[in-house]
Image (cartoon, rainbow, N blue to C red):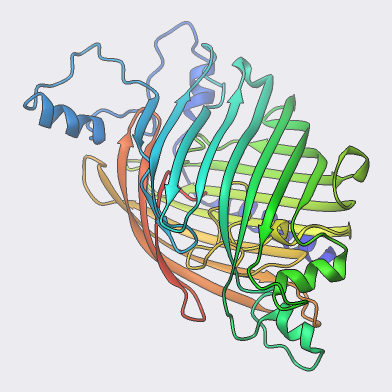
Length: 435
């Protein structure tokens, strides 16, 4: 765990140096706050004049290209078919609504977002969720939360970072799964999470909350004792094979200067937290975890602010206690389930886990309707046959296109193709950037 904290500090130090060396447009929010009594001049990042999005395309098709009225106010709500695809879920069809706006009249207030979706996938997954990230006027408070109900199928490839199992018992080999065989785990999943942050200094928030992850009707397929990685883990760590509850308190510190959570052009984001699971509030086992989420955005062009280099480091480290197998930190186990493109969710996992990613985002069309990205990631974790975190790394990477869905909220459709090791590859289709 000390290594995880050290690499996060080093990462913060490096991007802080980079922030001082890379020039970028002046912060329009700060500029506007000094001129509240006059009409603020939009920065190139805020000015959507000349941009073309999905709504403009629909207007062209349905209204024969008739331009929008000059006083037309673009809605901050986007309702779209929830078409998605990735190796974990297969193909997905449903409906999704994404909303975004700045609350109040204070231009310093950060952008608020919310979303809801109901969907079904080709792998038999039924998923419903509501989430929100709301900043009250003047950023006095920030409310973050989600509600999930789902029937899921989780492909399991064993515990660890993919390092060969040397020696050990037969159950060690099953748990580490050196053949990378897939074990589908069926379950019903429910999650409630809510955190409240208070602004305690400029751009700095302190928060607390509670989270419950509940799974029942867990079925890993093979009923033979210790025949699957999940059954070996559960027997070793004292969890029932067919259900669990992970209930705990959340305490976080957050620092935010990024200009938009959907697609940031510039700024910095940091969230560091502690999760304390307790049996007296219903958790199956006690545990203590530390998490870090660090993101930095460099706008590389003053005239095309969406030309961006984005960096991300996410980590989760178990300090004490036990956590359920399906709650282990791993691939795509960040808050938005988007890390580690190139692999299925939880392809790699351990009690200590870290993922570092970089992405270059660039416009392709002058009207910004289509943009492109190239990206790469490195994942590291521990296992139960001697591998320590940051001892073994697994790479992934790829590229993709972005289609501008709503220029008012910077909502876009993300189409990525990514590769990983051990034959992993796949198409990833989602709304908004991965980070």
